[in-house]
Image (cartoon, rainbow, N blue to C red; front, side):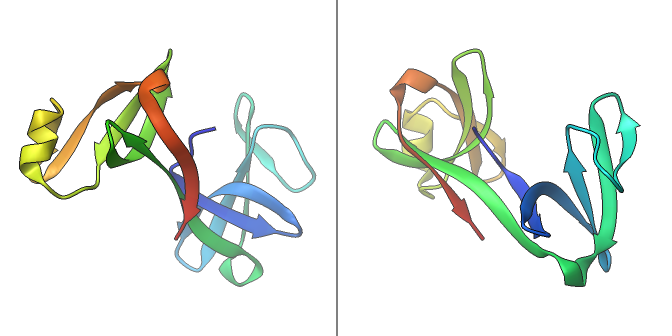
Length: 120
């Protein structure tokens, strides 16, 4: 699974999360006690930030020997963002300059190596 966003550990379980001031919004795909349905198949509970351990999770990888963050996946392709910091290398890889100094592109998942999750 490709993840790029906040997660929170609360009462022994991990949830997708979003900080909201002093609170944290927890999300899950199934109904549970204390969670309100915010749309079909999506449930939310707001808890005090002091009750959770909040972290940011990203998925990293290597593509063509260069370091990337994985932003998304779709039908056998991964949306990747180059983290090597060398514009000539990014251009040689055929990446699009998404904004100044930020290079992204689509890589075939079969060409991506060392996919790993890390937390900040």
